[in-house]
Length: 170
Figure 1 (cartoon, rainbow, N blue to C red):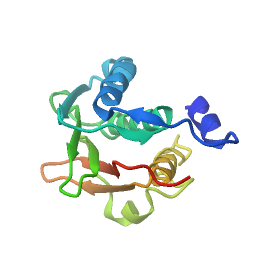
Figure 2 (figure 1 turned 30 degrees about the vertical axis):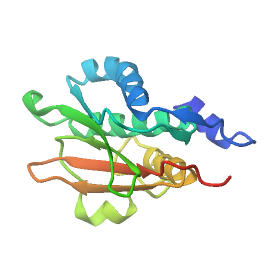
Figure 3 (figure 1 turned 135 degrees about the horizontal axis):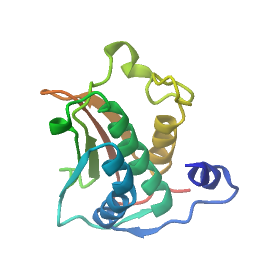
């Protein structure tokens, strides 16, 4: 995480290139697998096989996904083992943008904090710094995208970020 923060604050433009989000998701799943095992969580993927590549910084987008998945693991600490599952999905929207979602089966987002969860230094965790979701928002917005979160029927939360298929001007 420290390296991700350092790369965000270093001077200069991000290193953008053509990124296949499905490949990036699969790479992140491999990276977080030790944490998944440690937290007794299953990670599943539902990937749209027909996604175009996007112009993006792959390291920054990896950081977005890692933050969202680790938060999902944390949200399920008190969830029965049989329900500890994270689902990462990709799809192309009708407007051509690409939506990536991370869904957990944890406690969901308390209504009273929902509007603040993407603020820097806001946290509901005793041991948290409140940086993770703020970093997620900053990275996604720097790529011309949007991020949102909602509680899901049946329990848990889903975090979606939507990225355009054409890169914003730097």
